Image 1 (cartoon, rainbow, N blue to C red):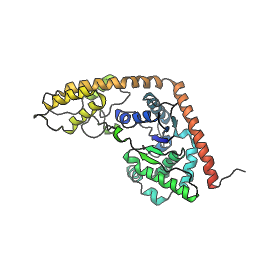
Image 2: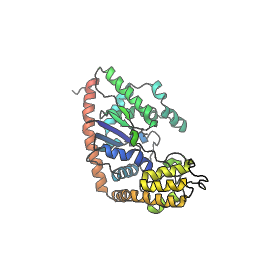
Image 3: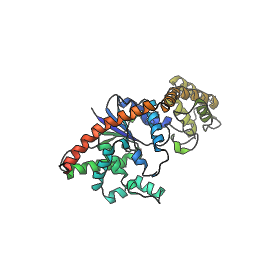
Image 4: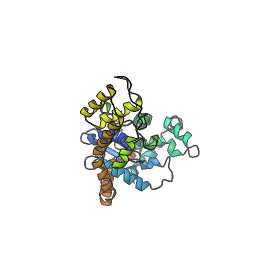
Length: 331
Ligand code: TRP
């Protein structure tokens, strides 16, 4: 079975954009492939060396992914720092990672610009840690967004280099994977661009938002005074609302509001009311599971322990072989 792996940043709550852009596909993929999903808490130290409540954040992310449908029985869902083997493989990879190539990585340059007082070695070697994450399970496919493609290219470089240097066809060369047709870009509510937590208050709808908050956010979404001529092209904020409707509602409802738009009879208030209720219908069960899990220490620890156990089995095997290949032997 194909091995798929993805890393999850332990920042913030899941929003509809995360859900339809990635999580929904993860949930489906766990039925078809041998999936590894992990929360990248080691990586977070590259930008937040003294993280406040790291444990709490990781716990929340874990609860939200479980609530959204990742199943610890079907996939291997674990926390990066529960796998110290990753750190060892990272060390080995760093011995053959060169300053020049690491300095050229765009995300490094961006972060170095953003935090000039903390251009640490972890930031520079972010790609070798990411490579360790991926090749430790010999993953073949990595679902990543555009922003991570260069890091994945570095993974391929490190894997190929390892194979070449130690003259063994050991690590598979992982491929980027995008969900093609199934990749849904969910727009935000601020009238431009996609849904994201950094775009400002009210742009994103979180899976844990309560109905009142959802109604408030949707009703405040940017609109205009409406079309003045039949079949007018939609300005971006309006087009975004229709995209959201398409994702969240039925074809009938979408057709209804399209017709209203095209005949200049649209009342955005009605569209938003409908949209908000559809979103609430969708998020409510997930939200309830998030709330339940957040209070269920036993369920969270059980999931984390199960994930760690499965992940370590695979990682230990790789490290045993890697040590052997490089030439470390026990006496
Ligand atoms: N760098 C990824 C991000 O910022 C997170 C990540 C860490 C990751 N290790 C990974 C993603 C391995 C895929 C595979 O989103």
